[in-house]
Length: 581
Image (tube, rainbow, N blue to C red):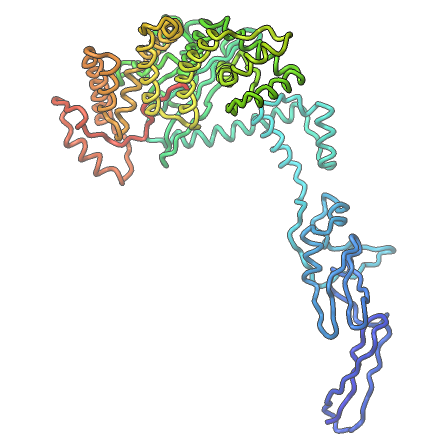
């Protein structure tokens, strides 16, 4: 065995290093392996070298430089080689700014395989090992893009003709030049296909619900006086999740007719096969007595055993609250107009607003409110404007004396009226905020807010203060109509909530009705028992978890001797009432 000197040649102009290596032949010759010319060195197989070059920084130190962004990375120092993993990450993960900018949208990765066919039919060398990392640019999919355009139109109520708008077409082509813009007819077909798929999905859910469904109705009227009734279903699925889905939009050529709503309900029940599952009906529009009777008759036919068609909610709480607020604003119209003009004077001029803020700072008014113009179609914005202006009334008074052009300043009596108006608008403003804070408000939450508003307005309407009485009496007259029609149903809903049962109803009715409270409490009690006995009689499919509880509850029930809040309840997957917020 002998020694052989082997030369580990460095690329380019690096110096040759020789080390002695023991050999197995018995000759004692020393062979010197000369370095090979650069062109004959073994070819680097890693594909990263298509994007990097090796630069010598100093003797024994080499760095890899990106051909695109010229950023350098460690490669070798002395006998230590850093490898290529970090170089691959620079290219593959899209951290190279120049490569990412120049990369074609349709390329899989910067490491896509080169073409096999070269000039004159020669095949290029294909590396044996591939590094195929995640690409920052996904594959282009024409069908997926069509789906997203249809989804966008449906979600945001965009017109179907948006696909023909020149600006939109140009925008899409710049985002993805390979996308073939769809036509009006194509996107219309895509929207219909998406609707049919969603309908099948909801149909399967509705077929499996063990309880009943509540319907709410809303009417939209076009500029051509054609009505569209939106029928929304509210139900609880097998997983105890509350759903709210628009089931039908029924065109009604004569929306003012008495049977417009009843026709829409009949279409919905027939379309979805829900004739035996209807529980309650609620509508947001004011109906004539004939139309109301037709709806009540329909509910009695589809649901004959449930309170004889009384589960028909004919008043929308949101519309009622809006009407109450508008009555209060109507009573104080002159004063509200002065405040609106004052706010407009400040907010429509930069110099006026700067002067106003300067006075506020000089007077050291602690209010953090900011003045804003109201939208007269939204009463809550008017309320917020009045609250802000009321807290800054000293600034308005000072502006009246310092600015000769400002002559709309409200008097002290006006500000007193504004404060009183805001006090009672706050009642319904807070109630609205609480009821709308949840995406799916349930009926048991309504009673807590409604009875407090009714009690406060009822007491204030009989106040000895003429200003209070003037403001609140019209408000109470409007709200009292809603209370008389819906208080029993709201009370039934809150009694089903095991946290309150009959105690809350007894307490609130005693405050509102006084000596007549027992009569109204009895109506609620009888309604609860009637609903309970109906559920006992119906073969509702309960999950195994609740079978024993349900059987025990039925065994203990004594219909001939109602015991108030001691009546057992079966857990049923049906929302007791659905009301409009």
